[in-house]
Each structure stands twice: as structure tokens, then as C-alpha cells.
Amino acid sequence: MRFRWAATALIGISAAIAVSPPVGKTAPSRSLSPVASSHPSGAADGACRDLLAALPLGQTEPAPYLAAAACLRKRDSSEAVAGDGGAHSPLERIIRSPSPGPGSVSDSILKARLPAGKDWFLNQMERARVRRDLAKVLDMAYLAEAKGFADAEIYRELAALYLAVPDTYRAGLALLRQSETDSTQSGYIQYQLENLTHFAGSEIPAAALLDSLTAAYRHRTARTAELLETLSWSVRDYAAAYKNLLAMMALKKADASVAIERVNRFQSLGYFDFAAAILDKLDWRRLPQPWLALAGTAYLQIRSQLQDWPAIVAETAPIVTGTLPPRRFNDEETFLIGNAFLSLGQADPALARARQLAEKGEAPWGFRGRLLQARALSALGKTQEAARTLDALKRDPKRQEATGPILFWQACLALDLGRYPAAESLLVLASAYTGAEESQRALEYRFFLLVDTGKARGPFFQGLPESPHSRAERRQSLNQVGEDSPLWSFAQLEKAQIHLAESEPDSAEAVLDRVSKRSPDRLTGFQAEAKAAFTAEKLPGGRQAALARYEDLLIKYQQGVIPEFSRGRIKALR
Image (cartoon, rainbow, N blue to C red):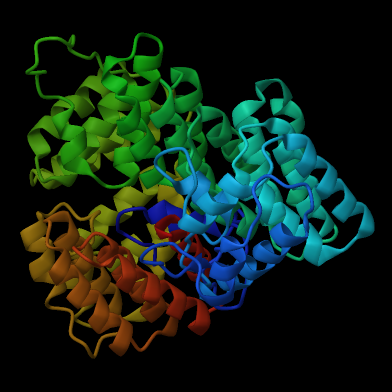
């Protein structure tokens, strides 16, 4: 059974879009950077404190500085906790600091005592790299980071040092830091970052590297966000691409063409929540033409895919600010608005828009308008008129569209009237027309017809969204499907969707929890668990509970649509 809930199509297509693979079988946190435990004062302890106190001022002999760096590196490593996403090196502390300058007391001491010129650091780093002394390579890199140069050459050398280790995560941080001060080398830095994702000496998966860089880097310029966003798209790390795009939009005024193109990308991949957030960030209603028209259509499409019917209907209300002109809706938008009215149980305004499309709408919206007209007539209790509308559409010699959708809605009328043999014949014919949404749904409906031929069948079909009944009537029908029926778990999933549509997420989650524990069908139970996790995301304090559920799903069920959806949501929430 398909998922009738927010982000339905995201689950349905996620298996086909190659969401980035997990690092481990249970998809743990992908942060490569452990975090140092918080030091109340930031000062070094014990031997490190003594080594720092004994440091000379600006001397060229590297030994005392390297000894202090070795001690501080060991301290940072011992205090680090994997997966917390914090800073445990001077460069990370500088990157995440809200103001320029050292990130800790020990960094400040090193910065004050180390030689002032960058040539000393470049020479010492080159010597360590040539000698392949990895301990000294890391110690020297630590000192260069602590000095906090705002110089592209230093960070270019740091990136080379870390590749010798190899440590692609730190090399990536150095390259991003370099790009802040070297705008002329953006293309080459992008090339180097791309090489990090498939560096032969590293076993870190590309998506894990991008997730860690995205979590660690506090963007000060839009350039670094743009570099990471482009790289995230190249490795199909869509959650990282979204986060970096939002960071880029926060640092500079977004170009409408770029933002709308990203909206279309995320929408085509099924990440409707990402696409909607980008449009909101863009403030699309104030865009000039033609971007306003493109953004307006995308907004209604995405809200329809998210089943946010009130938001669609709200677009038809007059603009109260007095500063924005009223919108004129094209055929596609008129259909989406009419469908939203019908989904909210307002058949009269839906019928008005359907007739408007049926009279002058061009293909394919004129065809869809006539289907919508039949559905609205059925919702108003005019069943015979709805049947005549569908029959006339099927016999129309000017029709260019396939017959499958017509047959499906004729079958829905037959199901509502209890004419099951006729409905099954129509569903068989409709399912032969692959490609249209209604034709594919015919297979599900025929499955439901065959699962239970008893008394639960009538109430079940009257409770589905395609039936011409109100939400209250549909919920009452679904309550009549007993737990002894094979249709019970499917009826409960539909009931949970009604709770969500009526802004009752707690009730929806309770229903889904019950299905996940008591469903006789294993796959339906996993579907309910995934829906419950998605619902929990929207509840206060439900983020961590949702993450735990998604990770549990990956353990229980590691192949197919459900785990691919779970991986995508884990990445989005982290």
C-alpha cells in the first residue's frame, strides 16, 4: 500500500535515487570529527602546562614547540568523543569561533610564542613532509593551525601535509579555509576537494566526508558554502547539499534562477520538505517575472505533494498587505487548487475550478479538470451525473490521454456503490495502462478486493481518500474494519493519515505504533514504524526519538524502500 502521509513520494522513489550509502550497517553518525570535552578555562593540564610555560618567544629552533604540540594533540585526542560534532584542533576552534582569534588558552599561548613570519612554518612543514615523519607532520600542522594565519599559502601547505597522512577531513578543512582568502583559486580548490572524495589513500566514504565537513565548517563567506554545495551534489549527498545551500543563501542574496533550479532538483528527487524550505527562504512572492510564475507553480506542486491542502487554498485568498498584486493561476495551478478544495471536503469551489478547466483548459489539464469534475459531483452526491461525465470523457474522440485514469475513477464509483465485480473488471483494465498514477493505483485496489471478501470490504473502501466522503465519515467507516480482517492494518494507516490532516499528530502516532506492533503483515508493520518516526519528527522534542526509530529500522530491515527512506531522514535530521 502506498504511503498516504507528508512526503509520500519521498519514500516511494528514494530507492531509485541512490541516497548516499551508510558508513556502517546500522548507519551511525557520520561525523568524522570527535569533539574535545569542554575545558572550563581552556588551559592545558600537567605536562602540557609546563611545556607551554617553558616555550621560548619567537625562536627558530622547532623542538620545544613540537614537544608542546605533541602533548596538546594527545590531550585533544584523549578528550575527544566521536560523533559529537565538536572541535578538537586549533583550526576547528578557529573555524567555529564567532569572532576571529584563538579558540582556547593553549592556542593563545602558542600564537604568542611561535615565530611571527610564515616562512618558518612553510619551511618546517615542507621538511616534515619530505622526511615522511608523520608524528612531526601532525605536530607541525598543529602549530601552523594555532598561529591562525589568514594566508592562503599556509592552508595550501596544510592541505598537502594532511594528504600525506592521509587525513582527507582535515585536508578539506584546510582547503575551505584557503578559499576564504584566495578567490582566484576557487576552481582549482573545487578540483582538489573533488579529489578528496575519491582519494586512493583514504577509506572514508565520500558521503561521510561531506557530512563531516558540512557539520564542522562555520561559513564566513558564501564561497565556502558554494564549494561544499557543489561537491555534495556530485556525490549525491542531498542532505549536505541542502544545508550548504541554505548557508549560502544566508550569506548572500540568492539568485532566483539558481534557487528555483535547486527547488526543482530537490522536488524531482522527492525531497519535498527541502524544496519547500528553499522557497520560503527565497521569499518567492516578491520575485519579478518570470521567476514569480515558476516559483508559484513549484510552490503549489510541492504543497500538493506534501498534502498541505490548507496552504494551497490559502493562495487563493486576497493579499492583505496591499503591496503584492493578485496572482493569476494557470491551468496546472487551477487544477491543484481545485484538488486541494476537494481534499478538504469543499466540493463546490472544487467543482467551479474543474468546470473552468473542462471548458477551456488545454491538454492535459482539460482532461484532468473533467476527472476532477466527476469526483466533485460524486462528493456532492450526484453519482449518476459523475458517471455520465466519466463516460462522456471516455467516448470523447478529441481526447488525447490514456483511458486508464478514467477506468480507475469509474471503478471508484463502483466500489462506493458496492458493485465489486464491475469494480474489479474496471481495475484490471485500468492497471493495463501503466504510467499514469491512477492506473498504477488500480493494482493496489484490486489487491484490497482480493485480500478480504467479507463484510469489512465495504467500510474499508468508503474510508479511502478516493471515496467521495468527508473525513469524519471516512474515519467512521475505517473504525468498522475489525482487527480480524486482513484489511485492518491498511485501514489503520489511512486512519492515521486522517489524524495528521486534522492536526492530531499524537493520535496519529498512537495509531501507527499500534500497527507497527500488531500488524500481521511484516512490511505493513515496517511502513507504520517509518510513518510513526516521520510523525515524531514534528512533535516537540521528537527529533532524537525519530532518529532512534530510523536507526532501528535499518537494523531490522536493511534493503528496499523503507531503509532508503530512513537513511535519507537520518542524514536530514543530523
